[in-house]
Amino acid sequence: MNEFVVVANRLPVDKIEDADGNVSWKRSPGGLVSALEPLMRRRSGAWIGWPGSPAAEGSSVEPERFTAGDIAMVAVPLTDQEVEDYYEGYSNGTLWPLYHDVVAPPEFHRHWYDAYRKVNQRFADAAAQEAAHGATVWVQDYQLQLLPQMLREQRPDLRIGFFLHIPFPPTELFTRLPRRKELLEGLLGADLVGFQRPGAAANFVRLSRDVLGLETSRHHVTTANGRRVTAKHYPISIDFMELDTLARQPETLHRSEQLRRDLGNPKHVILGVDRLDYTKGIDLRLKAFGELLDEGRVSAEDTSYVQVATPSRERVEQYRLMREQIEATVGRINGTHGRIGRQPIHYLHSSFDRDDLVAMLRLADVALITPLRDGMNLVAKEYIASRVHSDGVLILSEFAGAAVELKQAVLVNPYDTDAMKDSIAKALTMSHKEQVDRMRPMRRRVRTFDVAAWAQAFLDDLAGAGAGSASRPGRSH
Ligand code: ADP
Ligand code: F6P
Image 1 (cartoon, helix red, strand yellow):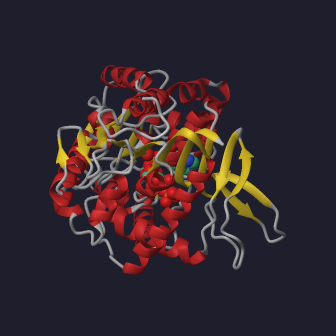
Image 2 (spheres, rainbow, N blue to C red; image 1 turned 60 degrees about the horizontal axis):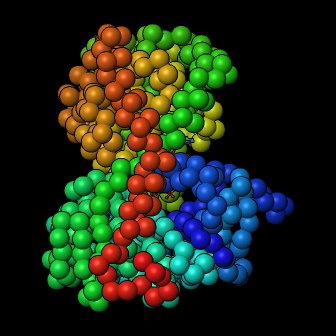
Image 3 (cartoon, helix red, strand yellow; image 1 turned 45 degrees about the horizontal axis):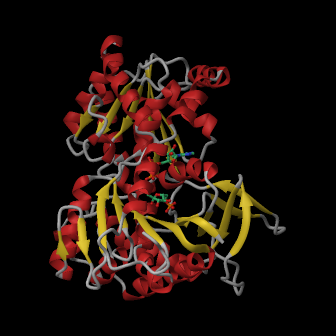
């Protein structure tokens, strides 16, 4: 039994099973894991999540406990059909595009929703099993929005928090969801619902009033049975010191110098690091870079653009199509502007160790982070933490949550190709003094509001949430 339990769709490690049945574990992708892993290493508790691949045909879907990297894990298996309907379907084919400004068209299928409800119940049962009496359970992200209410029904003694890592849409988009009431009621099972941005929390409160007819105030919703639920924003962050320390290691410097040599010692290195996702705006970024080369405003002889595109959700049709399109564009630009021994774009479709990633961030004179919509974007903050000499230019989309805090970045509308081109050109010619003047305040900001401060702020508010509610069984406060 645990006093503190995190429930997320994914465990921080993915299970890899070879043909002989040997099992190994590999860090799983994405911002949620990057943010919560350092927290869980410092706190005792359990992490409940899916181990990242479908359970073998006919095997049990009973949760399995193990420890990895000092974290107690509870693996919740999903069948192949559940991965298709709950994860690829409802989570990433309905909610993901809808919550990201419909940058791709969401699909609505009743059997996807049925699987979503069933899997949320399985995770809720596992959490109810693992949590000690009166424990704190912190539920993460859009894959598990029904879970807070399901858990409360079984375990009213628990203190339940929910954090949404992605944007939360305005009324006009959210109300398209056929089961919109159930999703809102699911979230209202929590004592505290956290969002990345203030507007997202306001959207949730407004929807609770308009769709469910509940009484609301600025940061609170009163449920039908008199519980008071708080909704506020808590911008997520990174472990600044871990990255800063890693970036200062002599080995990191050697590695980044070697990478620059491998690229042919270009004068400028531009870097993009993203999961290969249509929300990240990789295609529009390539278009802007290609036009700069076409017009001779950027020379392939002195500029290298490295784009890391982490494999993600590869069985989802829209992801497959986008990959084909991006790879064709890279090929076209390299074919037009490259020569033997020198390509303008280095495209890497793979995962990297933390050390390698930090070496790339240290190497980059310019980070090009231009999502069409993003809850936060931790890579932007990781770039800042890696700039130990306070130089380098961050080009950041106005539509990333990070733009709210990182005001000194070169902010850009990624849909405006001319503005993107001007931002890249400006970054490549920015004086050292201006780079430092911009980078210093951003480093201060990320150092102060790091992931520990984020978690502390959320958990402190969670400890005090629910005041004014009908009394909580088994608790003295
Ligand atoms: P998202 O959560 O949408 O994937 P974020 O930018 O918030 O986007 O977080 C991505 C996280 O994944 C960052 O911590 C980043 O360093 C890490 N990451 C991205 N690409 C890779 C990669 N190829 N190898 C290892 N880690 C990666
Ligand atoms: O941060 C958003 C998020 O969807 C996380 O919930 C998730 O773990 C991460 O991106 C990576 O996506 P996935 O788990 O689908 O590979």
